[in-house]
Length: 358
Image (tube, rainbow, N blue to C red; front, side, top):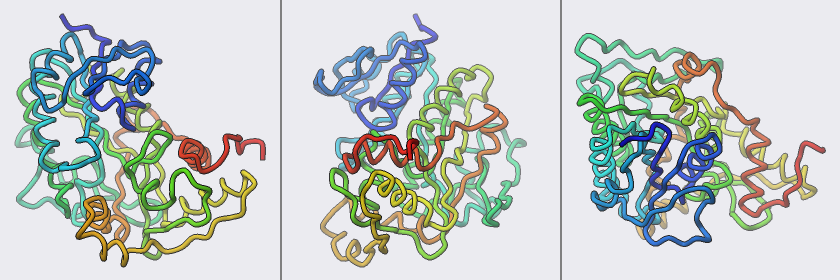
């Protein structure tokens, strides 16, 4: 029997999964989480942990028994073999959701879109075409305050990368599930940063975790904007949408604005401000060494992934949150310096002293 406030979080030891699990538990949900080999020291308190593997359909179905929601925030260990494992993991989540009639929540990304997504639809519509043959409308690529066009949820998905194409396929399979009677919520956001995030541009590209910050790498081309998303804000958005899930479309997609760095300098400058407000010398902002990444990438998978996403630093790809605002009234939004401070404290780069006193 389904409990309307019981949720299974897959990937609860990761960044977004862990943050969603914490926030759901704090708002009165019964939270279950599954992982291979349960290490109690790594497990969040107040959550029921069950052993299992997201690549094993029977494990996922057993863990999801009685759940009205499944948060699919799981990735292969260390992101290794991501392209071959991520779709089977999602298929297992969909199979489990079918058995319990659960809503699936997916943290989405901007990778679905390339610069061509600003233009009109072509022969490929992607998963956004499932509401019926008469429901597809011309994408609204209106211009934002800094004159760059903004991508709506209905814009054609024209990914430039392998990871982006897999993301589109993931959403296609979720659209199939919704078309067959299920419910899906997808929240697309920019590059994650936050206290619990490890595999991201902020911690792998801009700074070095665990060390005082002497320099900040800036991957952005000159005056190119970039979209960031603070993890607790993304999780809060998902929690608020789940509270309204019965009133949403069966296949509901939402974009977050997050923190739009208008020219690629705002986030590096924020890091420098926070560091100096904690009593250290201001770090130098230097250009990200793309030449070195290109040189080493044939031998290192993570660097190949970074290089593949370079287009997001060369061309502004910005998502429009108008639909989210219309649904929630406002978007959860932590001020940039506060978000950066919490992130740097958690990474061990600065001591835990609130900058609000400065």
